[in-house]
Length: 239
Image (cartoon, rainbow, N blue to C red; front, side, top):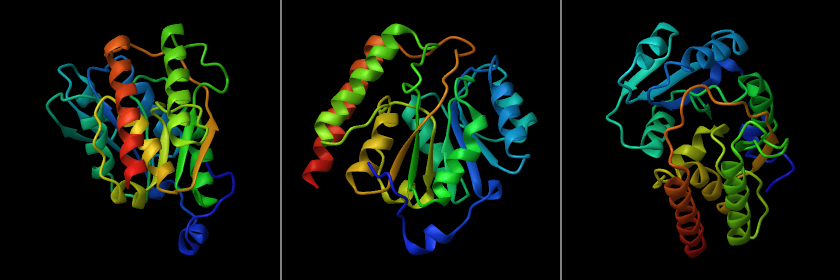
C-alpha cells in the first residue's frame, strides 16, 4: 500500500473540488437515516457534490432522497454489490466516494478524502477499525479484523479494513476494473486496485452506531465475504 502520493503527472497536478465529486450509495429501506446522511453531504460540500442513490426500497427512502436533490435510480433488490456497482458506474464526476445510507460514516471527512486524491492517490479507504469501532457489534468487529488479516495474507500486503463502505476513487479505477462480487464487493473494491498497483491510502475514520436495523445476516454474509476475498485474490494473482 502506497504511503506517498504518485498518480499520473496530469492527475497529480489536477486539483479537484466538491464540484468534481459524486457521493454514491445503494439504498434499501433506510428512511430512518437517509435524511441525516444527505443533509450532512449537502452541508459539508455546500450542496456542490452530486449524490446518486441506487434504490430498491419499499418505504419512503427514494422520496426523501429526491427531496434532498439526489439522483435516484430504481433497481429491484439484488444485493449490496449490485446496487453499489450500479451507483459507481452511474456517477458523472471524476472523483467518486462510496458511503452507506445508515448514518454510520463521517461525511465530515469528505474534504480529507478529496485532499488525498488531490495529493495523487487513486483510492482513499476509510479504516473504521483504527479507532476501535466501538459502535460496531463485537461479532462484526472481530469478523472485519479477520477479513483484513485474510486479505493481507493472500495479497502479501497489510491492509486494516477490507469491508469499509466509505472510499474515494478516481474514475479511471472504477472504469478500468470489471467488478464481479455482490456481498463481497466492498472487499473487492480494495483488493483489485491494490493488486493492480494503484496508489491506495487507508485513512482512519470514526464509525458511528447505525440508524435503523441491519439487513445483513452476519454469519451468512461473513462467509460470503471471506469466499469473495479468497476468490478475488486468487484471480488477481493469476493475471
